[in-house]
Image 1 (tube, rainbow, N blue to C red):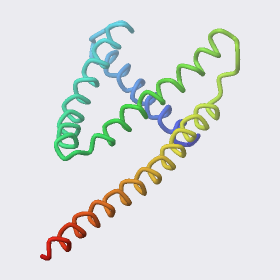
Image 2 (image 1 turned 180 degrees about the horizontal axis):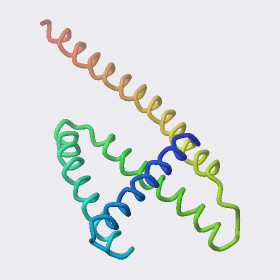
Image 3 (image 1 turned 180 degrees about the vertical axis):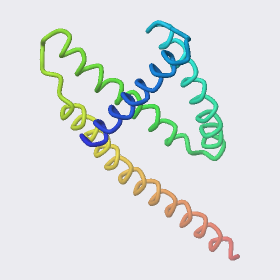
Length: 142
């Protein structure tokens, strides 16, 4: 998980440098606030155009748990970063990537356990329903 977070941070830093290079060499001279406004606006809209159709399809096919997972995972990522930044800013702790990695991994492991338990429960429930339908069919003599 540490490697993933570090890799993601590196990618963001490279993109940031590229945007600054385009801004400086293109003669645009947007300030920091304007660049944040433009890039986050464009990035957000790209995500809308990609994610909305996917979520719409998932909802239509009854896969709302996947939508829920994506939403909660996103919140966990934001929360993990916010906690570490808050510790750094307030001096109440040390900002460590490992803390973020362990927190995110904790969610992933606990969700995996939940998914296994849920899948087992739903599988048993489906088998019981099938047995009930079969029992009713045999009771009618069919």
